[in-house]
Length: 283
Image (cartoon, rainbow, N blue to C red; front, side):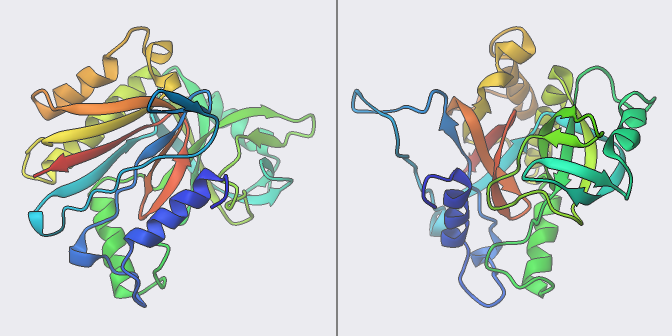
């Protein structure tokens, strides 16, 4: 993993997956890795500040019947068609979409009638959701992916779009280091706003509860992007109220604001931005 957070996330995925030829998960449980990078790149341990390192906590329900699930909200909703990346230049420059100039393809969509309200336009990129130890196409892999979809996990990574170059190429925030933009990837525009962030967070939390017979979690760990506090919503505690509304009661919760959030897309853990990543716990 080195100093790359995505590398550490991949190591965690490998540790949680059952190491067999199909990558099946013990007891049918899906891995749930959530976390975040500290804002300011400092970690405090026993009153001392550290400029590097990490800390974590591993929870295993095992035979105790504890269920651990992830609720991940990237704060945006998709619109427009899926577009295939057919040209790239560097790690985060897209030079061609569906065989056409990105600016000519995207501007009519960005300024068109299908934009779902005010907000920032972002790029949602479909990434490989299969478990790190699986063989694609196996029954175990298909069953696990189906369960991940039923549980409402995201199927794409959402990244900010920065600008168009004079040639009309799209400059977009990079994906994880081990996953550069590549020809053949699918992209769909997303709209990010306070209203969409709250609606998506509430909807995913309600979906999670519905998957457990309407039962809210007994406890939760919530890691939210530092840009999803009062700077996005205009006041504090807005997302906590949205979760309380979805759960129907107060739930004991701990967490922190982060400068990069970890959470699953399908069956893999990825580093996100502008995201709220929750671990919900049921006894």
